[in-house]
Amino acid sequence: MSPNAEIETTLEHLTELCCDALQEGGEFNHERAEQLTSNLSTNGWERHSEGRPPLSNVLKDRIRESCREPAIHRGAAIDGVVGEVQSLYERASRYSGKAPGETEQAQSEQAQSEQAMSPRTM
Image (cartoon, rainbow, N blue to C red):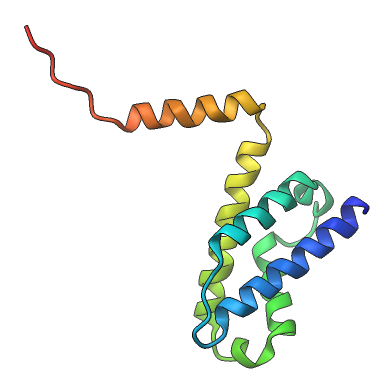
């Protein structure tokens, strides 16, 4: 499958995921969204979408087209779901630009810096 076809398929899956979350009683599948946004990053969404609207705008348009009934009066809900997807994509993009060891090291360093230092004793 070519990168463009892979990206298109991933966008379709993300749209379905968002539409499912907007249904009455629907839930946002965070784990699946992470997988899909990681796939977008890996397949070069940023490179292939140069000069186009950001991912959040693309998803909003697709949601309004694909799931018209729940999307008509749910602008705030759409913004929330799409915002979450955008955040996941940005996180995936940030880590995909680093070597595998760097990602683990950066996460480890961040965890260590967040821990409180123990008091010194004399």
